[in-house]
Structure formats: structure tokens, C-alpha cells
Length: 222
Image 1: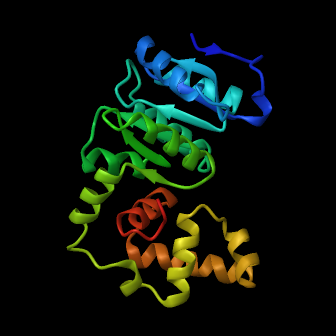
Image 2: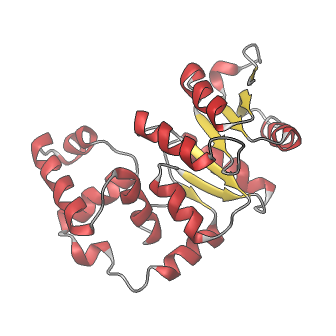
């Protein structure tokens, strides 16, 4: 059963967080850390993926912090279901896994950020703040290792035209096709055509993979 905290002071002005982890003591520690200042509020907790999924769409927090090792439905499965229903959902994975392979799987399933449980306490606040504001966040050590593994592939700037690369970076930073059309003074149809070309040239199937490739190559600011 998830726990909700609807009456916390300043709820409307703080970044609202849903915690999903099967360990009560871990949730308590994260909540204490986040609420030690005046920027975040934990509005609900869940101990399983199924509960987390329901809670996310019932409460609509600014961000979900999700563990991958959960009883029943895995965190990855929960992440995938949330992303399929809402591609804009802001989910930060906080996991015991600190290897690039799991990072790639999480990003491809819709995670907007990834942090290992061995990361510094201060980095958690940075990650939550970044993802809640629509910016990807990857733990620096994992990002460096992921980038090193990508060196056999071509940089997107060498594959895409200058305009496509510009749109590629804007998409990876969370801008919609409509946003990009307005910012670049182009028609939505033109931006949509560029989007299709980008996906084809880079061999991508969805927006989550686009973000992952952009992160790998440092095309988005972490």
C-alpha cells in the first residue's frame, strides 16, 4: 500500500516526489535527505512496481524515483509501462546496478535519469532537480563509461546534416516538435520530416533511444 502525504507545508511550491523501493528503510532515508531542505516533498511511497504505476497516474508527481529490483513486476517493466502510457513521464532510476548495460536498458525503456545507490548523497538532489526540470541526468562515472563504449560508432554530427543535428539535440533536451518549429521558425511538417530522417539515419525506434544516444555522445548537457 502506498503512503501519501497530501498536507505537507508548501506542497504546491515544492518538487513533488514519488518513491518506489521495496525497502522501508531506504525510502525513509531518501525522504529524509530530500526533505532536509525546502525544495522537495515526498508525496507518496510505494513498495512494488504495480503500486508505483498506479500511484504515479493517480497522484501525478513531478518525478518518480524508481528502484529496479522490486518484488513482482520489475522496475524495468514498470518503467516501460509508464513510458508507453506517458512518454513525458519523469522517472529517475536509483539502482544498485552501476554498469552501463543496465543504464542503457533503463534509458531505452524511458528513464530520464540514472543514479546508482553508491552515488554521493548530494548527487541525489542534483539528479532529482535536473530530471524534474526536464533535463536528463546520468551519474558522471556511468556516463563516462557509456561514452567510452560508444567510441566504435560514428558521432551523430557526422551522420546528420547540420539542421538535423540541431533538431536532434533539441529533441534530446525535451523539446517537442511543436516547440522546435516555433523556436526555429519552421513548419511542424518540416520539423516532423527532419525527425523521421534523424530516427532513420541513427537506427532509432523511439524517443527514449534518441535521448540515450544523445547522452552517450554528450549532445545534451548533464
